Length: 340
Figure 1: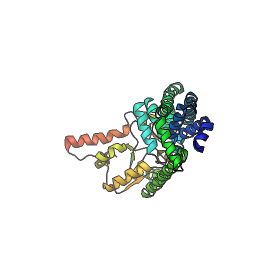
Figure 2: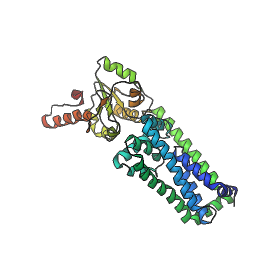
Figure 3: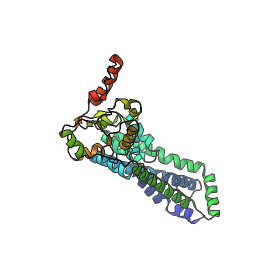
Figure 4: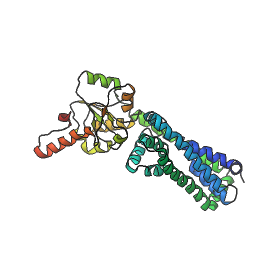
């Protein structure tokens, strides 16, 4: 038995609890290999399977409860924090929003198995007004499946895992060192990728104060809200005069965006990575006067600037559809410019 295995045997329970808890709180820790190793040790009687299963579920529930109540009382600030610490800027938050708004509490179960998604689902559930009892039921099921499945797989394939660990020990390595090494490489790569994306997307942004000044001055500015339509059910607020055009619609509806005005695009994440990507895409499609809003709608909200309440379906999307219908019927060339 190598030193790493001996360490896991002697301190397995607290290691599993702390690792699962920190991973569920958002740290990019390689918990799955640890659970597999714990399951393999339980097959040889060196680790208590039921106790390990219980503390893994408990760690998930404690972490998710913390995020749920942070989402309940801090809302968008929590999502902003998750955007800032995410290794994949705001894509993780946005994709989890899509999963949750589409599947509801079933999304809580699914997100548990996707790295990073499980951290975002609890505050989103709280922001959606889900009762804690209902969330706890869904999250409990997700935690049982998450902790139990990987421990059971480790138990089931304990022989193969032990053979791998023995081979690594024979060449002077250890399972834990491999896990740590792969974790460090993964985090380093994602951090480098994040910095590269942000450098690539560094372009002329507009601040919320500058945009508000343009509105007060009466300048004709086209403002586009890029959030998915389902997100407006969670946060039914728009910057005054904004049109709603989801990111998934940009590719086939960019012709509706005027080329003769300044276009401001925004999303819900303070890193504004998604809006910057859309701005670059629109720039390549001929919308040359396009700028992302620095800080997104949260920056606008923090300055206490006015907001419009979006209707369901969103009022802002109506003029775009009307203009498209007008083109089909009369060929008048009505587009977003006239709607604006």
